[in-house]
Every structure is written in C-alpha cells, then in structure tokens.
Image (cartoon, rainbow, N blue to C red; front, side):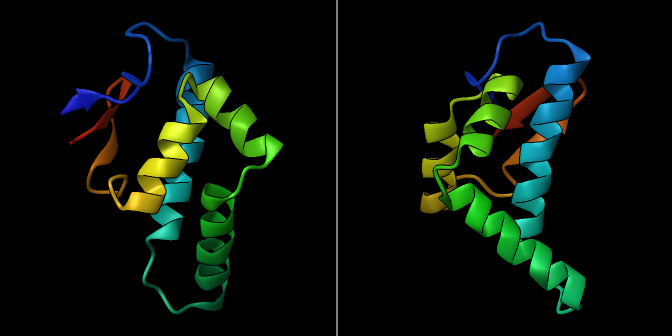
Length: 96
C-alpha cells in the first residue's frame, strides 16, 4: 500500500483525518449494494458527488490534503474502491 496523497503529508491533524473520512465514506456509500431506500439514495448521492466537479468536493479534498482530480479520476477508472482505500491509523492508504 502507498500513502494516498502521495496523497497526503505524513503528519496531519485530526481535522485532516476527519475530512479524509468524509471521502472514504463517500467511496463506501457509492459502492453499497444495499437495496434499502436510504442506502440507495446515499449511493446515488455519493456517486454524483464523486463524479462531479463541485466546489464542496474540491473543498473537502483540499481539507483532507488530497488532490481532487486524483480522487475523481481514480473513482471514474475504478482504481479507488473501498478495498483499496482505507484509513490505517492516522493515514489514508491506497493500494495500487
């Protein structure tokens, strides 16, 4: 596994970890296979958010110390999945 920003600096504060968790939650929701109404809606909203170019997506990525284009492109190509993107201790990790 490699650190996701390459993705992010080695030392970060709890708020950075919180925002990284928001991105991880979106990835988890987007991959949900549940047919419960609330979870279907969460899945749809997460996919729209991950695929979009909204200011809030860019802001969350910036607050997490992540490149929004890397996250969006990784999501679109299938490289970023729940199995590959996890929080390990104090770091978000991405398995290539």
